[in-house]
Image 1 (cartoon, one colour):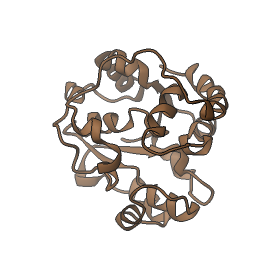
Image 2: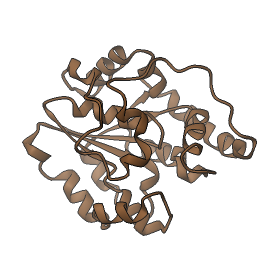
Image 3: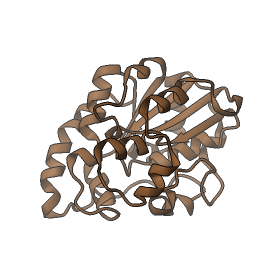
Length: 232
């Protein structure tokens, strides 16, 4: 099975990759369209040169790797994707061949977390519009990161059942220090999860979003609410 997990940034996506990556039967890949996205858009991100050098910049080459044989002969292949990477010129037809899962998170939490690492994110940066668009086009399973943080075992069991995957308790923890398949950008973004060995506890109240990002929050909320009604 090929599992394409779609989220925006700061959505528990790395922890989810570690959870699936700790299964003996599952290979993982970390944001395989990142270099192609930067090359096509010209957007400047931290560690730009290293990212561009570390991955294929041709999206067709990326698609071939995602739809071909699973790495290391593993039965399952978990693909961590960022919805904002699916810009014009990046093929989408291959999504009909994989199990699509959409990982959502309240935009106030996403914006507050993202802004701490990269100032002034826009609606396009955080992927909510693109996530809803991909879901409307291909459908799939929707899971809320808040629910996973609240009950990791219960929600991961539910997710495995929804996608037809046998539950494995190995998904609840992982070794400290990152994963061998982390993207080169991990040293900038993954500090907290590198220091973890499992999912963090339940989330507290929604954070305050700075005044200058309130417009981004209000623009993202309808897309989040649209997806939230579909969650398992």
